[in-house]
Image 1 (cartoon, rainbow, N blue to C red):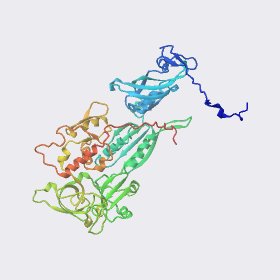
Image 2 (image 1 turned 180 degrees about the vertical axis):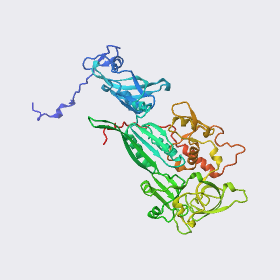
Image 3 (image 1 turned 60 degrees about the horizontal axis):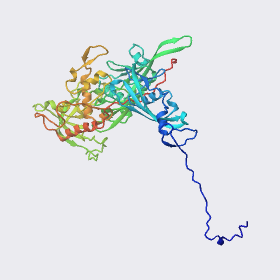
Image 4 (image 1 turned 180 degrees about the horizontal axis):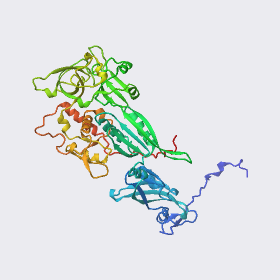
Length: 558
């Protein structure tokens, strides 16, 4: 047929179209429940609902297990001989539970959550959701959930076992400071607790002039020494003692001792710089006040506002002692104050620059607080660096250099006209503020000390346990600890460096006053609110850092 000569006009009303067949899916009845379902390849005549009810892809996964925790340190045993920190409902604990479920690796893990249990039940329940193939039903993907219950068993790790045995430590860090008080160690204790540096210790012992930390590994002791070097100005000496030696393999076993000596200078101490050191740093004055201790010693001249920073290396090349410590501070009342410079530092004096925002030079008239009201009271005119924070009627602490019995070679070399009669150090608050119940408390490394921080009662009369026996005694260094707490209340910068915890204050509620209690000033209210604002930002519970196992120390040392 010739299609070229075909005249389409003669087709008339006829139309040309295409036909598309419609494929209808095959439906069958489920052999189990009788519902209509699509036919599956492979001849499987069972619906998905019946597959989920019939198939079991988690039959070979155990539903019970055992977790071994150390009773002393709380670490979890990871077979064969590893112990890690795994707090309750933590990622570390979940990972160890999933690893102990045999056959779980053949399935796809979709979800795993902890279920609530009684804290004293010593049970850990986990709900796990998995996805896998039901091979007997044509590799159909199904999802199932199940619960696993783990029982907590108590044990003892090798490190804790050594801690109850004498002379089993491998390295020790001895911290010493030759001062008459323990406030530096109280502050250092809070830094150690904040950074969890005490977690790897075998035991901690308190000596007359410091603390001793014992470790099972040399690397843990080196980590502690590095932390101390960054926290306080100090110097370190290392010694080692040969314990045993194998003559056949020449393998030696040592005990290491790290001696850390902290500089004998504390906050609020007054010092006299050696002439050689003063010339090297370009200072014309030699009498300074230590206003802060960090990785270096920070001093300020109360008469010129000159500030200097002395690193630990420079101090030990030119060592010097404090002229007087905070034990000799005397209370004075401010009678009059005349600023030499205003708070912003725009001066009309001799052009000396202001060193810090709240420090400003001022000429102050003071009188001993103990002599107020007596006929022989004497007024003193003092130039101080506290002009930005003092006002008339304030109580300030200072050193009466003219009446103190000082035994210092560098001080004896000074000219009498260059020695001020009084050196004011810091502003203080009335004792009635310190006698109120504190809104915060501190943690201590010794467990028995934590029970002493409860409000109420005199801390000097509280009893503490000594060692493992039942004997009791007075809390050591109670006066120094009380002074340290008072400094925390008055110094916001010091509070920002440590962790504080809210304390349950018993007695009058906040804001109530007794009838015999005087009205507070606006500045005292600001002082209290500053502590309250700090407390609102606190962590109420101490979290554990993730434990990273340290490699064993090599037995062979040269």
